[in-house]
Length: 131
Image 1: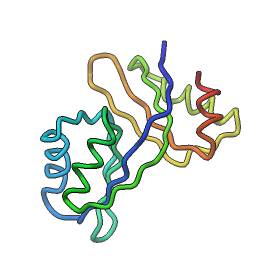
Image 2: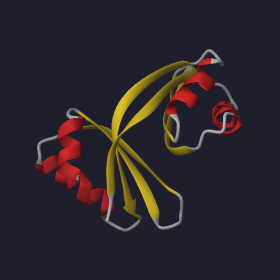
Image 3: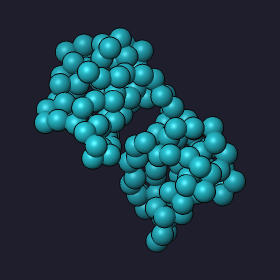
Image 4: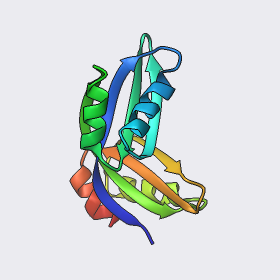
C-alpha cells in the first residue's frame, strides 16, 4: 500500500558555509517544523536545500527571516513501505507513462516507511499514474 499526493517543496538557497546544515535544520526545529525529506547539495559559494516539511508556510517564514532565498516547487510524494525495489517500481511506472523525472530523492525513518519525492515534467500526470 502506498499514499501518493502533491506536496510543496521548499528550495532554499543559502551560503555554502560550514555549519549551514545545522543552521537550516535548527531553524526548522525552532519553528516547530518537521522535515519529512531533504536533499542538500552545494555549487560554488551557494548551498541548495530541497525540503519537504509538515508545514511549508511556517518553514518558508522561518527561513526568509534569515534572509535566505526560498522558492516553492510542486512535487509528487509517495509514502511507501521501505522495501527493496520500491523506488524502481515507481520509476518504471513513470517511465512507461513517458513522464520525465527532473529529479528525485527519498527519506526513510527506519520504521518501515519511506517517502519518495519526484519533480517531473508533468506532475499532474505523475499523480494519476502513481495512484
